[in-house]
Length: 372
Ligand SMILES: NC(=O)c1ccc[n+]([C@@H]2O[C@H](COP(=O)([O-])OP(=O)(O)OC[C@H]3O[C@@H](n4cnc5c(N)ncnc54)[C@H](O)[C@@H]3O)[C@@H](O)[C@H]2O)c1
Image (cartoon, rainbow, N blue to C red; front, side, top):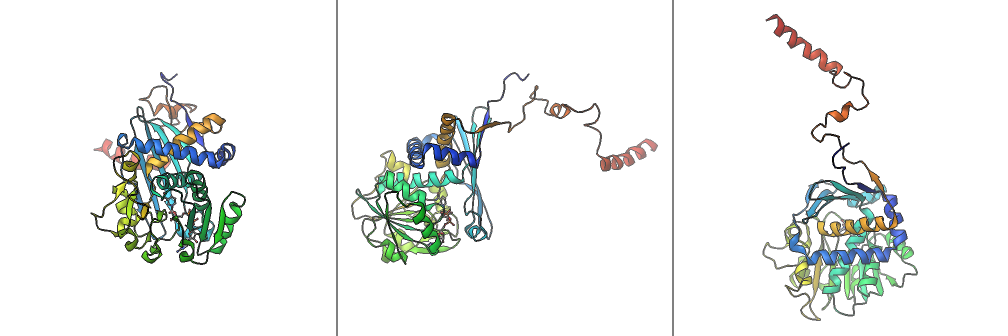
């Protein structure tokens, strides 16, 4: 028997996650993840942070997002392929891991596609709660795809939004959103242009997917006091805001080194002033300066949000008895005898006999050595 058994690794599959969110309730999950995000952002200096690692192609990006504090390490695998939906595949797909820092043992392997939508919406709402004008009720929602309902519900519950102004270049996406949010206490108006959706809004959320330097919002559309929640511009060459919008706004970011590469501010000079959001939360830097100021949350999605979401989902799964314990890593009786694990259940001599091709190749030099 091993001296110390490995601590268990819990596996939360995609169907597990659907069951978890159904049983706990989506609003409770959004609020719970938001509370974790806020608490973790308040202890920002405790985390070992780095910009995510991205592999770009013409079609999209695949990224790894690591982070750790003294106790736990987390990473997320996530892609972004805007053209996927044409083939019936999601734009964003993700899974993630939590591990013990002290030993490196993995403790959770979890789906993160649904969870990414929850944590992104929770993060947006946490930021808007600090940055939007008090009493914000009307939100324009540009881009009505997979993330959009989660954004709408997070802003309803955490910010007090009651009215949505919807626009998507694909009308069927808006029809889907309307059907999904029917009876959810949100009055929704379908608009025929970005300009119509944005007019008179307190908050504008852009959550479009297009691998291009788009200008969804231009300076002429921006009204004093608006808060812009720019979610869809999240990798190099993929932006949503005209640079003139950024020039006239106070811009807040998650983790500056990553957002300089991926966010809408990639269009701006390296010394363009931004504030990391954790500084606002912890009272070190001001948030909104006046009711007339335009604020931008240039969201790209940072690893800490996934850390917070993974911790929330792990605890919720334990509470509800959801998930399976899996043997993700091998444990041997003698930790230095990894090879020995391969002998278990094998007939003597069978394991280390050379493969057929290798045998033939090895015999020739051995024979010639013997002759010499
Ligand atoms: N910041 C973050 O943390 C974060 C997290 C998740 C996803 N995202 C990004 O959010 C975006 C949306 O993700 P999704 O999963 O909802 O994608 P999706 O493909 O399901 O939906 C995107 C929608 O945008 C619409 N659209 C594209 N161009 C538009 C335009 N010019 N005007 C109006 N609508 C337009 C599309 O028709 C589609 O309905 C993606 O770019 C994704 O990379 C960011």
